[in-house]
Image (tube, rainbow, N blue to C red; front, side, top):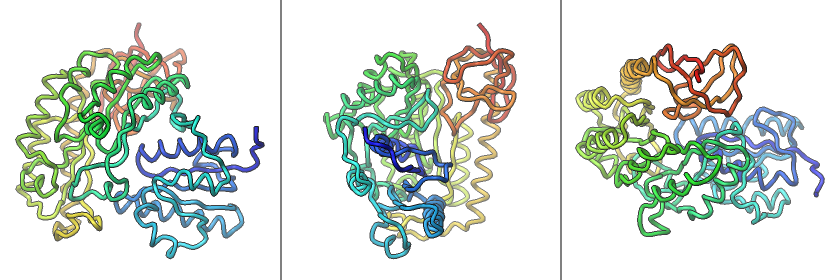
Amino acid sequence: MMKKTKKVNVITLGCSKNLVDSEVLMRQLDHRYEILSDSDKEAEIVVINTCGFIGDAKEESIDTILSAVEAKKAGKIEKVLVTGCLSERYKKELPHEIDHVDGFYGVNDLPKILQDLEVNYKKELVGERHLTTPSHYAYLKVSEGCDRSCSFCAIPLIRGKHVSEPEEKLVKEASFLADQGVKEVLLIAQDLTYYGIDLYGKRTIARLVEKLTHIDGIEWIRLHYAYPAGFPEELLQLMNENPKVCKYLDIPLQHINDRILKSMKRGLGSAGTRKLVKTMKEKVPGVALRTTLIVGYPGETEEEFEELLQFVRESEFDRLGVFQYSEEEDTSAYNLEDDVPEAVKQDRFERLMELQQDISLALNKKREGKVFKTIIDRKEGEFFVGRTEFDSPEVDNEVLITSKTPLQVGAFYNVLINRADFFDLYGKVVE
């Protein structure tokens, strides 16, 4: 065993897909270096895994890099390495604009990072990660890149074309996670529903999920980032019939107006989107749907926004995220005039979220008096904090549980919901 002589702090910004990349990097490093958490300031080497998706995320990435550079100038850090989406997207510009960074790397430059840190890439560690999530849940990235051409999105420019991971590799990785004590696996991708087309000639996400249900120790499988166009409906049958597959689906719809959807190049119009939502609710009774929407897209009129509001009223999404449109260079929408004033974007954002708040409260109230299988994430103050199958960690509702006896983090309990508010449920453990 090589002596671990230096500490490395890997700082992850952006989405859960970035987090998986960081965990893979850390697993390759941790036989040579001591790996520290993001909050630890005593590392000799800092690796920043950046996000380059939207303006605020890019700004956060730049600020984090500059902060690390200042620490290096002060003699607190020996090396600063920058990787991830921002570094990939601006690989030519960044080295000229930010000094004192020891290396800029793209999203596929893991071997180069390891080489520069004097670590040999270990093939035997493929499928293994240094987990940074709580020990009972982890993300499983089933593919990289995206073949879609959504007008507002720069991800294909950064991450490239869609590439599925082989089923056997993913089953091996999920088995490794289960051996580490992981009980909930969250499937992620830029486009989950496209999985398998490049490898098997057809969409095989349902087949993959079915294979994952056979892994001992995995009790929940959760699906994130399913693209609506071409959605494989056999996945719904599996979700309805297999208790290991959470009745939860994250499916970004972005809008409902036909003109805007066409301009966005979403591949599915208003009628198709409405039909898909209806089908999901019919084939999986009780399914929790999470979606994201964009307000202030170029040319969005008040009438078109009102159409979106009405769609949200009718659909009663369990979870909803809203983004205010921001220009992204090199995308097709960048050529459109960003003509919706910022104040109007903010107003529409607030109106949509206010509507969703009322919907969330009404849906939560329906859970009062019912018992749900709940996983415990942590202890916080007087409460044990958990989630039902209808909620993903960090972004969705939580169940706040009072218990005279300690509850085990990572364990499942049956919880009776006795009170609900806008975004939280309150309950107690029952036999």
